[in-house]
Image (cartoon, rainbow, N blue to C red):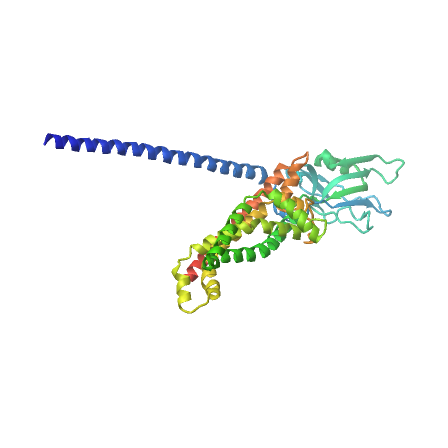
Length: 425
């Protein structure tokens, strides 16, 4: 009796000891998982905080819609100018300077590259600017609120021999520019520069690249996935080996660096479509890059479909083609949308391959048959020179993140709608 009790106690002690060791192992396993996961989370949060802190102040509607290159207009006074005697009343705001003899106020500002500029804040409807003309076209020039005055040459009188000349520029600030205008009655020459530094052209180029790339890669990728996921299983054994080799090649291609895709794409597609890179050659190169992503994601979506669904379709007399297009592809549509999202994300974020195939020139007027920088290449261009523009680069990064977020939410919503429709809800 005592031996049986001792044996039972020993078994209980061994169980408790084993259970304690298991809990310790589970604790360290879970702790290490949380620890290393937290590193990734901290890195992600740090990147997002850095991008938003640096780029949020630069991000604006003008930044999204304006041209990258500034437009320069030279203004002068026509020969019939007479001294203006009108004076104007206006209450300037904080850090705003008003020249009452001209009816113009000035403020300090910064362009998208972070350089100091002077903007016209207010122009009276009867301002003394009737004699101003565009030097190039000789047409009357109308000063507008928001114009950037780069420099101006002013005279105290219209007699060159007796006049005192005052030259002001944006580097001297709005206060000194206003003082120069207030002391003079005649404008000799002035340079107006639009802000520039916008990403409208790069944004349109990226949209073109997405359209060209997905119109090529999506049909080919879905077709390849249907072959590997549906028809390859019905082939004889010797042909199944070929399908397995194709899968291995697709996995290998997905690991090739993008710079090599750009090099090969530049050699092949530039030879076929001309020696200058353009958006079409860039789109073709990106289509080759994202094909493995679309094929693998779509094939996985096809294989998650329950086997009884296509088998029931075949048992009812439908052909394999009818089953594929009416049963398999509709049920795999959420996975196909996910693969499309992954492909679009790769297109938006790609830069190395596009440097060779679509060029690095930042254009304002986009033609698919000409080279133009995408948003990612725009960032590369801003950060590759001696004067790196971190603020504008971070602002473009915010745009890319919001585009990806919007597409993710859109595809999630479409997937939910498709699932509800398929379930008859």
